[in-house]
View: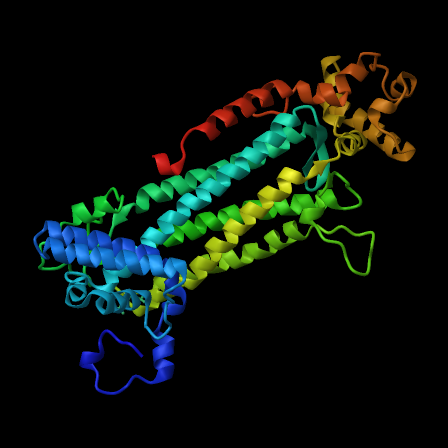
Length: 464
Ligand code: ARG
């Protein structure tokens, strides 16, 4: 057992207590961030005359060599230490001796862990943003290729009005675009450095918090040292945004699963993204979509867990806050994996255009347009609604669609129908007439695709 605080204690800590208290098994994940933060602290201390240039060089070199050795696998992060901070510090002292003991001057593990976690989460916000951008690029490509791919639009999972695949995909584009915007918002709000806040009340050493913050790419230092070591809001915001991404992916999954069913047959999922069943050779299961839908609860769980952990904590640091890590790491890895896999599945999926158009025709999705036709010919809307209702019943009985009826059949239900009705209620007309901003007409959607392309070219998080 290697302890930093051994001096004050007389008895050996019970092994169970030690294990319960330790966090190295999971905070080893941010060894890079721990070293990055320490380097900034040391460079700042030298500028402030707290250590000599030689000491700074020794410490920085030592830290860089630890990072290199861990990355190359020649140094194993030992679970004998309580946390990653103690491991790095002890290792540094082993390597460079006395100078290493100055690393922790004017710092506490409270501001250190706050910094490490912030650096880690900030990197992950950028990473999620990048993955979302890739996914949006795939979605926009599907949109561009399917401006005239007709399909039914649904309400209550019942065919309602015709639309296009481009329009349907465009809805997902908007959702994941908002998710990306949330990443940018979180980044901007969290980008302040807690380093130099000490245990809770700052320090008497002449630290330049502005300088260390700028070395680490922060907008500036945080404003209140108690808040700095107690704030986990950015993790909650991030987990909330990840939960929203998963909610969107889960809805998308649900649609892919429905579209893949025998009854719909709208899509063919690529072999690489589905599996067969050992016992039923006819099956091709949408496993990726089902797993993504299933993993959503896990990410929600992480959000609820940290909200609950934080709700009763008095200021400032409490050990409860160590619980901010494991589930957050899991939620990040889960969400990133789901976005990447979904992107792969959607870039290889085949849409069965004919089947989708047929489904739109057979689903009376042009019933509203047929009623509008009658209204334009002078029939009051209520009456038109009744006439089309009777027409739909007639079609159900004959297992056909409105536009497949002869003019004579139409006239039997209402004299008002003329030859021009066919042009007015074809799938193409029904869609192309819908020219309101945000609607499915190919004219509108083409503009939207171009705007999306422009959006995707600008505004990467790293360049802000
Ligand atoms: N392992 C701790 C955490 O994750 C580091 C901070 C320890 N600070 C303390 N006063 N015990 O929160």
